Length: 278
DNA sequence: ATTAATGTTCAGAA
DNA sequence: TTTCTGAACATTAA
Image (cartoon, rainbow, N blue to C red; front, side, top):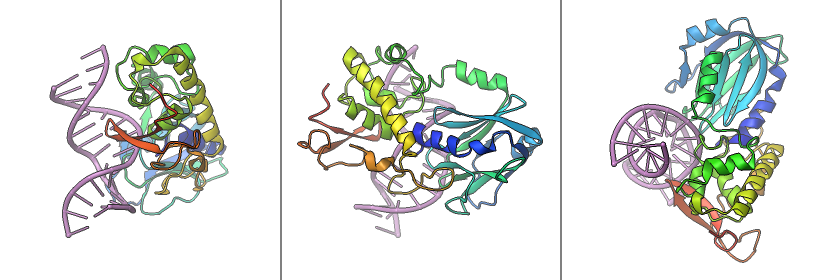
């Protein structure tokens, strides 16, 4: 499930289409219910035809094509979406393609097994509003320690749950939240307003370390095998997970306690009772 | 053969 | 204002 490192890997994987010209956009043959594409595909294709891709950015867990027209084309993978230039994992779940010219590859593809992902074309103004209206916080790789503290410290929400809220900080999801709190030695159920300054410092530092290392490893491909990089190869960070999906295993840090699973906000949290204190 | 679990985001309720 | 719940889905494990 793509979080910041997986989406950043997708972004890096398609950088070679920077400077390419979009010829057309189309839905690909797929017998499943269509994914959300806004505006509708014929309007989208008309607005994109002949337009150059100026740069490729990332906004939290979204891949953003910055177009020469100043419009932004946003790919939101949600649970199982992939932005690809190579062959997709299956033909039947290929949802969308951009045909390209002046490019080393002829197509940019969006594949999505579950179909919860979306593709949205926004004008520059709409895009800036999306940033300004507070729905998306600063990127997890960019946020400063004081800003992180300011956005979390007053809340009574458990710190693990707060990290899933993309309006506080964008990019951390269920998997990396557990990993970050484990390395920072903070109990996931601690209310944000009970987290101390030294703990925030460790959370901030570990957050950047974990995300950057996971990017180097091209993200985490879990047992369902869904997540792939832009060439359809699996990531390697899953081998480095200390706690995520390792309930009952010995904690790699203390080698004394078993990793526990806890349900918070209807999702699994993994942690070590011995290493992570409130 | 059902049912639960998976996890991101949004709309709408509390 | 803030926090919580359910729904959107497809697939797999139980």
